[in-house]
Image (cartoon, rainbow, N blue to C red; front, side, top):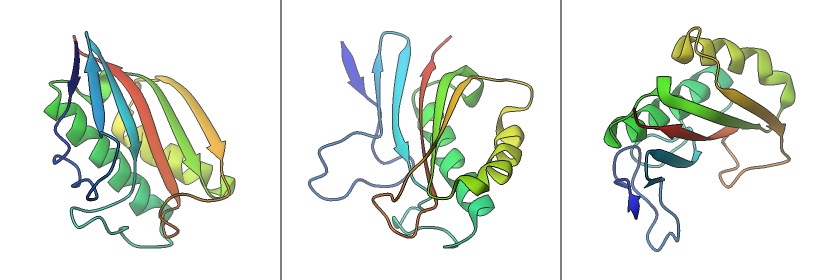
Amino acid sequence: MIEIISDEVAYPPKFGSPTSLALQYGNLIFISGMMPWNLERNVVVPGDIEIQTRQALANMDAVLKAAGSSMNNILKITFYLTDIRNKQVVWKVRKEFFGENRPASTLVGVSGLVDPLALLEVDAIACKE
């Protein structure tokens, strides 16, 4: 059975949004693209990739905790960057969240995101132990 993880843990969904922040199926957790938004759905510090990366990963951490999991259980993660030159900063922040844990990863350069002030979006697949 598919279980919806609370949509209120990272930031509230927009009225009428057809998506969920995360779904659980068995012991797998599928996390939608996490934006660098605060609880008011505003991008934190427009133009600062380091702070935005921390916020997006903190949002992901909140979703995983709500599902009874953690960042250490991420199996696959994808970063979407509006400027691929920011990858070194993203990797630095990523290491702060993951340490020596190295999930399968993809980094994709994109021309834009749903929020034009966002510099990245991050999605993932995780598991519960």
